Length: 450
Ligand code: PA5
Image (cartoon, rainbow, N blue to C red; front, top):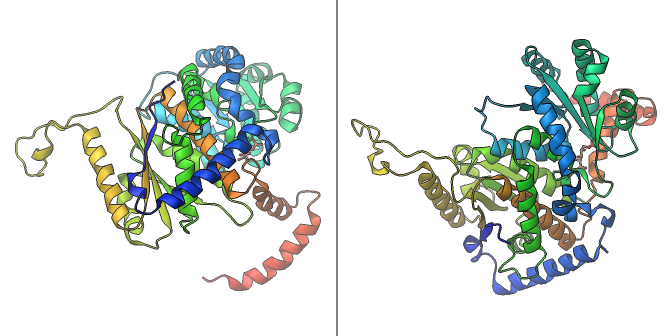
C-alpha cells in the first residue's frame, strides 16, 4: 500500500559518511527487531502498533456518538493534557480551517492552569449549545481534573444534572481512577483507553478519534492512512521505508553531537502536529541523561524570528522539514495595475510554488550554515496523509528510543514537578517534601531582584 510519504535526505549526506550511515542502519535494524519481538523495555505499552486495524472495532460507536454530539452541540469542549489532547488538536487544526463556521467547533481546556483562559472559554460558550469530552487515562491528572470540576458545575447549573450527564462524555481507563468512578456514578457515556497504549501514542484510540470525528473529519481515512504506513514501516529496507531512514538519520546525527532537532513545517495548519511531535519525541527519548531535544518552528513565519539562530548560532542543530507537495486549497498571485511592490515576476504562480521555493532556499541555506537537514514530503494534507504521518512518527520514535538504549514508553521524569506542586499546595500526604521545599524557599527569597 502507498502512503506517498517520502523523505529527502540529500542535505544530510555531507554530514553522514557511508560508514556512519551503515552503523546507524545496524543499530536501527536491531531496534526494529526488538520492537517486533516485544522483548524491549516498555513492552506492556506496545498496543499502539496494532491500532490502525484494532481501532476499527470501536469505530462504529465512535462515529455514532460523534454524530449525536454534532446534533446536540455547537461546541465540544475537550478537557485533557499531553497525550490526552495533543493528537486530536493536531489533526483537527491540520484539517479544519480556523475560519470554518459550519458544524461543531472543538475547543480545548484542562491543558494548563490559567483561570483567565477558562473564564473566557465559558463566556464564549454562553449562547452556544455545549457538550464536554473529558479525557484522562490515569483519571487523576490535576490540570484536566481542575478544569472539569469547573465545567461539570457549569454544565449542571446550565442544563440540570440529567441533561448535563447526557452531554458529558468521559474517555478514561476501563476500571481505575477518579474519573472512571465519577463517570460511573453520574452515568456519563464512556470510552475506554486500552491499558497497553500510553498517552502520547493514543491518538488512534477514542482519545483522539472522538473529538476528530466530532469536528467532521473522516476518521476511517485517518486509520486507512495509518494502516498503509504500518505495512511500510515494518520493512527492514531503508530505501523503501521512510520511517526507518528517518530513525537512521537522527541516530547518526545525534552521535555526532547534534543534540537538538528542529521540526520545521511550512504550513501553519501543521503547528499542532509539531506540538504533538514534541511531546512524542521529548517524552519518549529524553531520559537517563540522553536524547535529542525536540524543538519546532513554523515557516516561513519563524524564519523571521528563529531563522537567524538556525543559520548562524551555536552548531548543535539538525533540522527536519515538513512539507506537503500538493495543496488542497491554494491561490495564484494576481496581476496589479503597477509593479510598485516589485512582485510582477510572481504573477500567475501559485502560493504553493512560492512556498516550495522558500523551503528549498531555506534547506540549502541552513545546510550551508552547518545545519544538516532532511525533508519529510507529505503528498497532501488530508486525513489519510495525516494518519500515515502520525504512525510514521510513532514508529520512528520507538526505533530511536530503543537504539538510544532507553525505554521509549515511560515518562518517569514528569512526576517531579507534580510532587513539588502538591507539596507546595499542601496536598495531604506531601508534608515531608513541603517542609523541605519551604526551607529552600527561605533561601530563594534572597535571590530575587527587583
Ligand atoms: O504521554 C503521556 O502519558 C502523558 O503526556 C499523558 O498523556 C498526560 O500526562 C495526561 O495524562 P492522563 O491522560 O492520565 O491525564
